[in-house]
Image 1 (cartoon, one colour):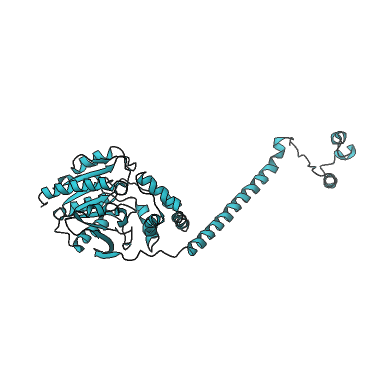
Image 2 (cartoon, rainbow, N blue to C red; image 1 turned 120 degrees about the vertical axis):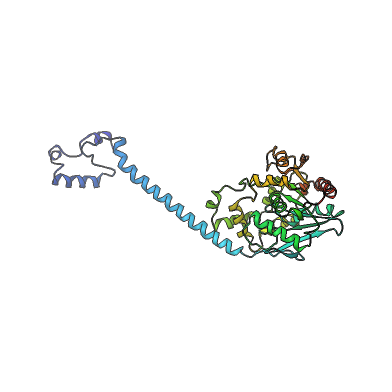
Length: 380
């Protein structure tokens, strides 16, 4: 529109004075219909930012409504997809054939044994591990010992039966010693990672039945380690199930966790190795046990209870990988002092899974402790 027209009054002079009256309102409405974009300026209203505010607010509200609607639609779509995926992948894996079981306390317990002669050694795994974690170490120990390993409830292929606490694990371990007729044989107990708390508790409860205790890559303490407490409020069903199954289905995820925990000295995981770590988390009951254990955190004992092990008259030892980043550099020495053990054994270059990365070095440490047990009188 030419500038001169914009600068001219839109109403003739004779009508401008009564533009605010009823007749003027009708004329204004008719003119507004003929001129697109025309807006009548109210009394006291100045052009500029203030004049456009009434338009911006409805526009902002419309965009907020659209964003909220989009979020709701996305949530519904993701939730529906999660339910569908979980239903499609709900078939549970079967345990491998040929496993051995025994009733240990109230748990149907999977176990394995190696060797037929020598003093007994019982291997107790840590969180999210199982009997197969010992597959490189146990044959070395079996040259001179009868070696036993069991799956604690919640892990591996033993029956899932909570609560997943040190108390329950210890009762299962002592029941296993009874079932295997090892109560009077004074076995050497090796506890890895959180399994260190279990063998410590067993020695405190039944010192006369235990020959010695090794804390391997574990301090036995209840440190509250584990995922952040807020995680259980974020990872709710069905999304946590979907994420777990997707993660377990990706070989690279399992290999990356294994490599981070085990280090460069560990053998590379082939397809069978990946399945060895993955399948225990895919059997019936595994997901429920996993969420329960994650909610409770890594099991352990109070520091004053662990310190009571120092007064138990059985040989003890503490063994750690020198590059174990799960614990601080001071943990091995502090643990040895706390439980009354000699200076800790540090395996050069090893991380958290020393029995996988350095089975020879761990076997040598076990043999050294076994020699001390043989030279010491049984605990009374």
